[in-house]
Image (cartoon, rainbow, N blue to C red; front, side, top):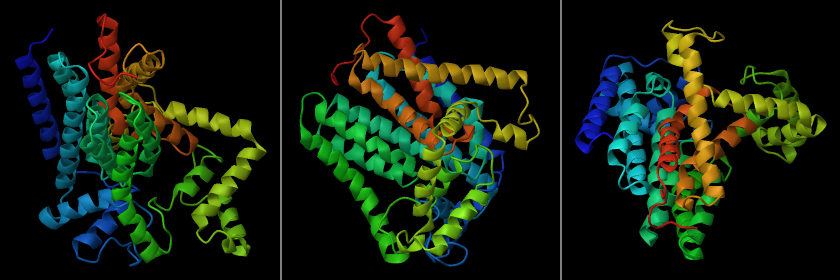
Length: 408
């Protein structure tokens, strides 16, 4: 077993290596990057979160554009600065996960530090910081939620329940896929350690405190009371068509727009909301084909992300080189550990609080499989997947792994 000092030294070396990668790497601008950078520039220039046309931002949620805007305002638009921003977010996320694991495994400090170091330098996750994309911010906020929810379940209190709701709300302002987590969070807080609905209501209040200002802003500026971005319907519709298409323009979307303009806009004032209805119609017409697409997305989501290596010419997508196959094996172990921990909770072999990490991963896995998935999306949960691996191994090697508190 590594000693405490060695574990901390390894973690510090990993943090230094991550920042060294960020300091020598300019961020890549990809197809999605302008949708974050344009409103970030507008905000940094004092014009608020707006699209290039000047209309209020509605295609993206505000969290990442605001963070990018702060960097632009303070440091300018240096591509290395964007990479260092993402590295900072990744390091913060790993440290949040570390704190949550230390609550679950109070005598596992050296192992927690070791796993934290490995999760920080895991290539599919670290290299994603070299893109102007929001996955590292999402990961940081979900990691903060993991830590806050774990603390709230282990040592229930009004403040901790409120903090769990607030951190979940911040994650929702980065990507709406975090919103379904409100249900298991409230249910768990209402049950552990004894039934008490007040704790659940407090967490939901914290969630609402984050989301309501954005929803009110949308009502005032774009005419809809909602906190979600305006592209969920097209993602679900595209997910009924194919797992390989141009998401900005495909025939089924154009046909739906024709129907909307011909009269459906009287009932659905926003096209994206009408896309949900069209998607449901397509699912009812051929549910088995849709389920095959869902299965394909579930598999795709679990694969290692190699976008950076493709950009620098170290690999080619569609090929099965030895390093990529090794990554597939590692990903299978990580997702398998996640399922294993979830199964242990269902069998009541461990405390309910152990379900926080696998629930975050599995809820997102399901949401992406039902709409659209790419291996890039799973990097947001990289540190949490490694946390699940440690929890699964800890249970396998300890006769009584259940921590104090948080019993179901």
